[in-house]
Image 1 (cartoon, helix red, strand yellow):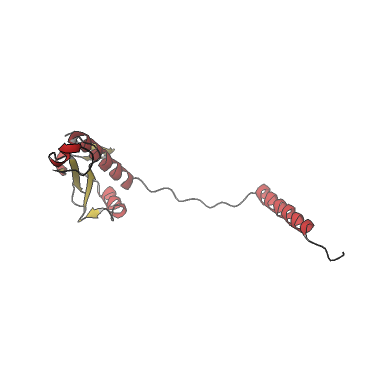
Image 2 (cartoon, rainbow, N blue to C red):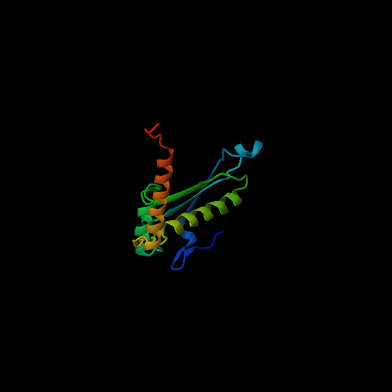
Length: 142
């Protein structure tokens, strides 16, 4: 738990750069919910961390802009009764968020033209539909 977090090759977050806070949880726990600090909050300074390569930092700051407060990403977990389990879940969520935020952008789609066969099928379907509608019309001959 206290070791470094490997987000992706070339991007490892040392345990010393994580800030942990624990507080009382509002979740399950019965009588002990008011006495134990089981809620886990982990913070990581994305903006000033020396462990993030610069290209990944720009990408993460851009994609996580709505979740950051002064460049700091914070994850809160109070799902479990155990502080230890909440710590594990918080680190997993943090790694997942950082991994998704630093993922390479998708390659742009190369525009293609419809094939001759697909054009013929589309036109044939339009003709079938038009003839169906034409047969449903009431003629003025009656």
